[in-house]
Image (cartoon, rainbow, N blue to C red; front, side, top):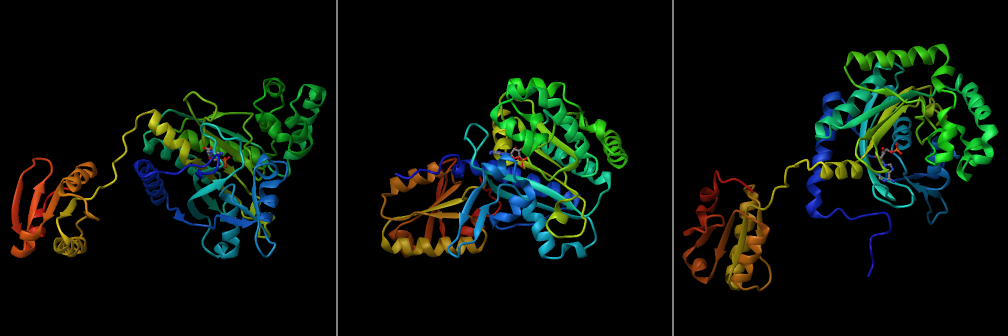
Length: 420
Ligand code: AMP
């Protein structure tokens, strides 16, 4: 028996209500803020990610799903959504539109991680990207969107951490200071951090290993190394967030897992117990599009993990609207009646009535059991006598009341009745 690959899961019909709820909240939020949907392929040229997300990050070094297609081209299943959006922005000349261009996506992300609760090899992200504007007001807009998104979902208990990691002008000085701080402790660092020290020193700060955390606690803070422009930018972001009455904390150890961020970074943590508390995160990536061969295009975005959101909705027992069910079930007895039942079902659907048909040769009792299990409001029964008299039996499943009506009047009889 085959099973879904490790770290992936099927989203079964009874879970789809949560997905629809989250996707609808995301779409409504984006409509309110003027973000339009974009859908990129699920795989891209491998180079897009190695160049942009950068080697030295776990995502590229250890977690990418790389495929070589039959032509020998190296592709990667997208581990995140920002690089594909930037690639599409350049490929389709979206820089010719008035800037910033505001986009959103809902897409799967693939990372070869060690599966555990809240950490999967395929997960889904809702993300927004605002491309082509350096205004700190845009950082505040995106952070406010993230905030509003979780509130609108009915998940109020989260914290918003922000930080600034500077730009290519001021960050090298900070990295130098960070390395100086860490170098006496090299022997105490975990094997991963020993690699990070040379490949990606910023990531030293968010290592979960207790002995590495101890060193991180006293590490220099990036905000003390910002150039004037980055400092002013970060101050403005904080002023705007305060003016919008959005609660936040500055977290000096927040650096994010992807390498393309500049200036503002932020993360939304759920207050619930458990290791996988990051619900979403984002930041500025002012150099990314230039690295892809475009003109300087300062941009900012965020992404949230849908599986983690749904698990929080479940944990908090947030009620999500049930998906609509079929309104009517059609049962039949005999071949002749089957044909009439099929024709009637087709006619009702054309009139926008949701109908599920019986199939096969189940007994009428079996068909009624099926109708009950489906929870339809009405069952229509067609037998030989009904075919001859051009009538049907209409059964109200709630009251059990049954009446014979002309087949031509089914629509009128169902008018005004509510779908379950
Ligand atoms: P990231 O691109 O790593 O910032 O991820 C954005 C969000 O996606 C995170 O805040 C999580 O909510 C979610 N996420 C990231 N990786 C995983 C994963 N392996 N499994 C489930 N959700 C994830």
